[in-house]
Image (cartoon, rainbow, N blue to C red; front, side, top):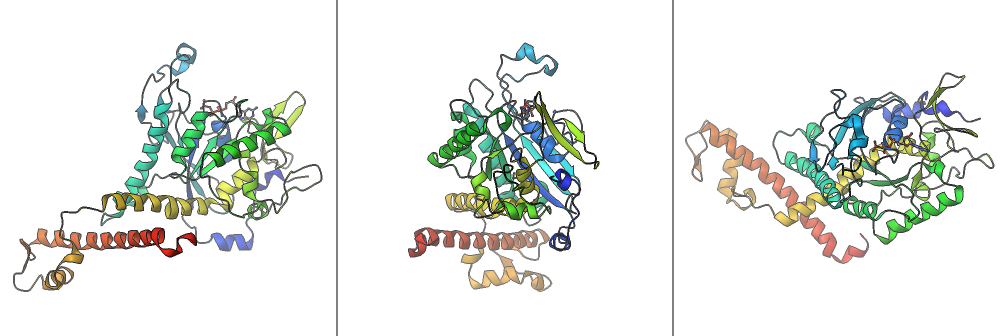
Length: 416
Ligand SMILES: Nc1nc2c(ncn2[C@@H]2O[C@H](COP(=O)(O)OP(=O)(O)OP(=O)(O)O)[C@@H](O)[C@H]2O)c(=O)[nH]1
């Protein structure tokens, strides 16, 4: 029998403890959930976090913000939804911070971002624009913070590290709106497509729907998160679990490539049952019996959970920072070529450059000036220090842009 409680009561082994020793402050992950109303996002979150996550706008002070992006015909009376069911809900943003239990010896702070109303309006044309603008804004905030002398990257970094896109199966395959939105945002966030409520599909229907989603992704050049050649065995080993390869049970083996499972087909539920071993599991009940959400033979849920909170957490963050954000930054800086009306350190004559870099040693010496400013003046000194720092940063950017341009135009392009 499977140990369904393994994720809840995992005792980290020695290797695991050593590997994670560095993460004294705990881990943090930002998840963006997209998908139409009723696609199962809240239920999935409850199952992922192992507790009920309240996502209403005003329930407690954990809701960081609930800014109305575009009110449209936003529903006001939430207790009487039937009265306004014919109106378009507009698009809002809800963010929530959740602190997760120390399953693998390290606490995880999960930042959740949702866009209620996304895809639920009669006219959804503005939704993708607004969501892309939000993602760009997060990159812009980080870029702005980077060029400040005193940086505060912790509070300004709101970049989601992964977007779980809930694609409800329809007889017509993937909705056009979902394809367009995925296309719009796939270069801004790591995209992982999800097929929710997989219990509503037969095995053949699920296989067909997975194929349809894969084809849409390929045909529309949608970039999803690249799991490379990572296999399931490694992911589950982190939790001291193995792929249940009992004959007739799991469709997967230890060597199954994660990319071959995607899109992840999940089954979730808010109903909880405590087992004889005192562990808690989520169950979905039917007339014919029940399914355990955490059972790896039921759906892909447990693999997805292990990927997000364990094996690929750091990689999702690294790709966000080193690939998606770097592309954005190179694009913006190439476009703007940074027009600064401050004196450029690299183009100053030797004397001027020297007077900036050695300014501190000269402050006590006889009065000196650079341009129109007196270096003995306290304010002028501060300004020149700032210019010096900024010019160094600009030079670094320029070097990166140059090397990127060389990569794009150089003879080794095909190898890159
Ligand atoms: N059959 C089945 N029902 C599910 C599953 N997951 C969620 N549901 C049900 O679907 C309904 C909607 O689920 P929610 O989690 O509230 O969906 P949501 O996407 O958060 O919806 P909004 O909050 O309205 O945007 C609920 O009644 C859930 O119990 C599943 O895997 N299978």
